[in-house]
Image (cartoon, rainbow, N blue to C red; front, side):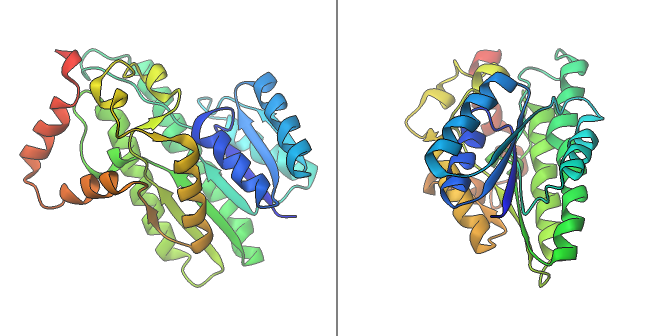
Length: 259
């Protein structure tokens, strides 16, 4: 069976993607900081779907973690056929007031670990002439984000990188897909400090399971960008036509509790 490596697999979209991949008969390598939680998830998926599950506890905020993860898989002789870069988090607040340490960790996870893992495992996929890469960004990737400035910038990077790589590998048997969900019912907002905002509590929030299904199907089809939900598609596309200043004001108003 092919093997899918999924980061941030202990909850939310990552957990649901692990379930979908197992259902589709993929062995799994699950990565997050919480070993106990991963092991429990792994046992459940192995029993339910009859797949092999390897658990690796790594904090991708550490610069050496991505290399250690790749080395451990190489030592076990586990090739990665599907790479899902889902790990990520946000930091909320005015840029002048937020912690540079937290933002540096966010850049390490959202940008650098994703880049390192993609570069490492893409090479093997190209040699075998098959493989799927799914990078999880956000609808935040389509415009700047006052009050979450660095987070929005990291997701813009993920989208830009993914689209460029998708073109580079065209015709090789390897595809790169960028999943850009909108507000999703996960632990992300509690960690970022945005869970009390009207935007994250509204009816437009999607379930992690529905987002994962959309992302997985798009990856299998080789689609370059997937934005789950009509309202999210409309919002992401509308910023292309609105004046940049208006877009900034609208995004700014989505965080009223920051004033």
